[in-house]
Length: 89
Image 1 (cartoon, rainbow, N blue to C red):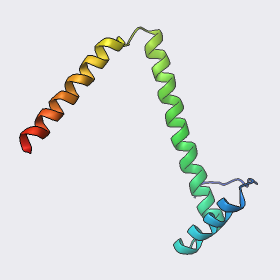
Image 2: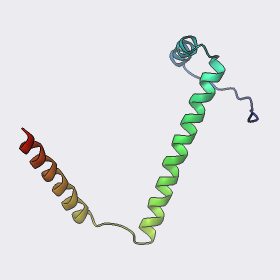
Image 3: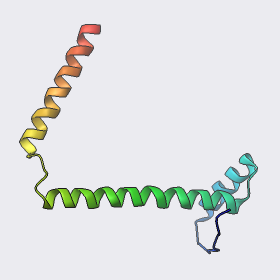
């Protein structure tokens, strides 16, 4: 089992009520539900931060696509999807 640490956080009354509802429905403790929520949030935010860092590094290294080229590719994909959809209709 992973070691745990205790934290005290403040949430709105509305969030506390929602947490209590989830805990009741899932038959888990409020502490368990809150810990799961914080863990999921932290993991998601770290993934976003890492993605931003990779993007910054790519831009610094010149690994970018010019805006006009990217928009041309996107427009071509949209046109192809619309044509495919029109063929099925």
